[in-house]
Length: 160
Image (cartoon, rainbow, N blue to C red; front, side, top):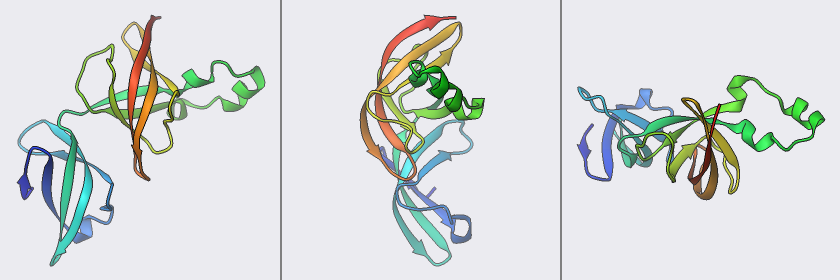
């Protein structure tokens, strides 16, 4: 890390280790010896000799991963469509990044999701001890080839 401010980090990395570095890419940064992670997006990239300098906008200072169950949107499918859409655990569940730390059940907040996963009105279930919470995407703030940033709102909690 080269420098830091309230809204960003200046990072330096060997050019050969940074083939993934593209504008808009998401990065997770652990500043040692601490235990806190930051999630950011690359906003500036420039080179100095064999080093890349990365300007990173901090999106979350205490991100938290949250598991989303996408099957919630398929409950009203007719039987044949449901059989065709049935997938494995890895395809029905996806991790998202909660940008504001909070406990379950969740209150309205922003999420970072895999590209193409969210659209306004789509619903997901969030597994939690003793049940699940249904959330709905209220607004899609931005999307790129790397992620989508969306506001969700809680719809309700059910117990199992």
